Image (cartoon, rainbow, N blue to C red; front, side, top):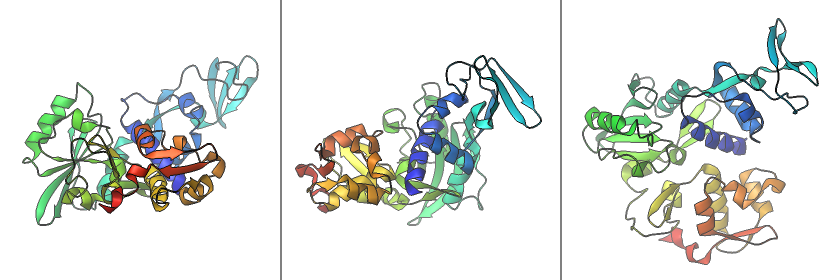
Length: 318
C-alpha cells in the first residue's frame, strides 16, 4: 500500500504541473502506471475532464481507433471495424483532469488551516494563499504554487508573492522542480511538497516541515557540496550544492543502503523495506525520477546488490 501511495504521489506531482489540458484516456491506460491512475481516481485527486477523448484505441484488439462511441442506458459502447460494438468503461473514454481545488483543500487540511482560514486564489490556477501558522513565535503565511516555471506566469506570481506579505514571512509549497532557478520568491521559503508530505487515504499527511521552518533542512550548505548530510533532517540530497528533494520511496531506498554502511545490500532486503515485489526491485527504476541522485550516490553489481559509494557512507554523521 505504501509503495502504491508513493508511486501515485510522484505521478500526481507531475500531473499537477501540467497545463490546463485534460489527459487523454489512452495516455493513462498505456502508461504502465494504470494502477496508480486508478488509485488517484479512487482518492478523488483525478476526475473526469472535458468530454470524451478522440482517436481512442480499441481496448479489445488494440489495433485501431474506435470509429464511433454511443451512450446506452447500461453504459458506453464503441465501434471497432474488427470487433464491432464493444463495451467501454468510463475510464476508457473519458478525459482525466487533476482536481486542483481538491489538492489545495488537502494541503490546507494537512497543515491544520482548513478550519481557521479560507484559502484564497491569488493567481488563477497557479497560486493560493492557504492561511497562517505560528512557528517559534513567528507568523508565517503559507502559499501553494504550481507551474512556477511557466514564463507567462512567473512575473505575475513573483508580484503577488511580494505584495502578499513581508519578505521572509512566506512559505511557498510547490511541486515545481528547481523552482529556485525560475522564480525569485521575495525572500520567502520554498518547500518541495514531496519532501514534506505523504499521500494517504484521506489526502496528504505533512511531516518534516519544521526542518524547513527551522532552517535545518539547508543550513550550512556549501556551494559545491555533494553529500547526503541532509538526507534525514530534510530528505534532501546535495549535488554540487544543488538541493534534490527525495521522494519517500527513494529516501527509504537510500536509508537501507545507509544502514548497510557501504556493504552490498541485496535487492531482497531492499524490496522488503520498500514493500515491493523483488522482481520489480531495480535501483534505476526506483530512482527513475532521481537519476542524478542514483548516479551520484549509488553503486551496484549485476547480481542484485546495491551500496552507497564509499565517499558518502559517513555523510549523515557530520
